[in-house]
Amino acid sequence: MTEAQWVRALADKTTRLGAMRALVGGVTSTELKSVRVSDTVLRALSDGVADSDPRVRWWSIQLLDHVADPRAVQAIVPALHDPVPRVRRNAAHALGCVSCKPAWDGRLPGDAQATLVRLAVSDPNAKVRRQAQWALACRTAPDR
Image (cartoon, rainbow, N blue to C red; front, side):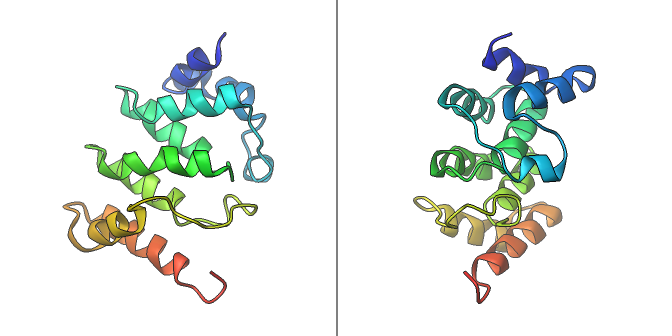
């Protein structure tokens, strides 16, 4: 399968674990904390963030969340505007969570910080608001 096909396979519970292993080499939190991906996989996952299937978008963000490469963080930012609250919430998590990607320098691209503030204050979904508030709190913690 191609990387793009593996990304599409994230939508199906029966193929998801195999797709995760093929794309990032692991499925456990321990395995995911040391993820390094090829440019091809990074592009495929980045494209997955804009897929028509919200399950593919959610899982693409979930995997990109563990990639410390600034391009992965950049790919997640547009999902803060996703029409599906669960996807927005996952994007907010990924942009605040240093634990998921310990090698990340914590920098956010463009207006991501301002978008997180807007979500924290006015997103129509309470879970998205709470996740954005958490992401902002993590970003302003003393070690940041």
